Length: 350
Ligand SMILES: Nc1ncnc2c1ncn2[C@@H]1O[C@H](COP(=O)(O)OP(=O)(O)O)[C@@H](O)[C@H]1O
Ligand SMILES: [Mg+2]
Image 1 (cartoon, rainbow, N blue to C red):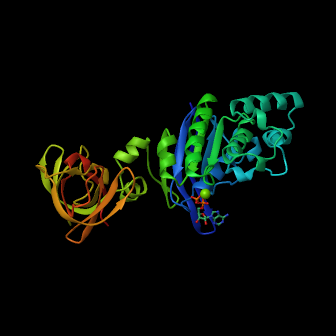
Image 2: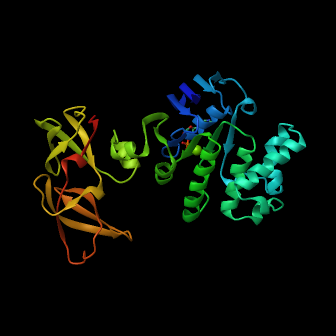
Image 3: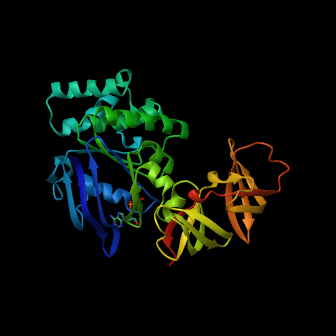
């Protein structure tokens, strides 16, 4: 059963189209992330699902019921923003009950929901404090708790972790995921942070210019990007222009590129004779290989702690290679190969 169904939704502001014919569903208990650069329409789309905006076209169903023109407070959804959306002059307990008071729930019911959420989120000892007396992680838990006390079947998150520091973000991520699973909530999570999307999501929808460019599980998106935009947005990718020379055997294609001829293994045929291809820096195999051998000078390097990024240059084209070994000091050129299965066909060249 799909809890949320977004059907051909568009949102226009004047003659600008912020969301362009988007469709997707979210099942019970599923965690779906909208991932894309700033300005691609994520918040706008979330606001259409929550009811803060009415779409220019299309339909939203929640629990199988058309809610396109139902106001936010009558929808079975709750929003969770960054923690600074807490009311600074209200205690944690008052913040957590805020929506319940607006809904005019009886005091006994409010108390019971408050206790339940405070216990689940480990906030029992903080209830009398003001938000600025809490740590960043605790504040974020209150923001989540405020959404959960509403007992929604869908929680909508808009970049909730963006003002937490990196370490904290990682632990709150896990917490959000755990709570979401405990309550079996459908979640739509908006972020521009690829690491967050990969770590948290059941499914990722990559957005670009108001459209969904690709959707899939984190591993599908990472291992099989369909376009150079996706390949580049998630992880690092060396992207090349290629021309198909011919098919060598089943699944094997020979292509000509700026860095020489390469053999590509793909179970889907190339989409055009001239197209983009990519390979990931961490897939470089060191030493000459039987196929796709590359010999090139190292132009510069960037130490990253547990690995070093090496930049090599072939025929004027820079490629990034991830070096995971030590003893790099005296190496000035690289002999490496790329396995045919590590090269991916992308979109046609325009
Ligand atoms: N109320 C509005 N009026 C006009 N343009 C808007 C409005 N809201 C958003 N936009 C525009 O729509 C685009 C998408 O915005 P938004 O959904 O906030 O992007 P994101 O959340 O992905 O960063 C942006 O170009 C933004 O300027
Ligand atoms: Mg936004």
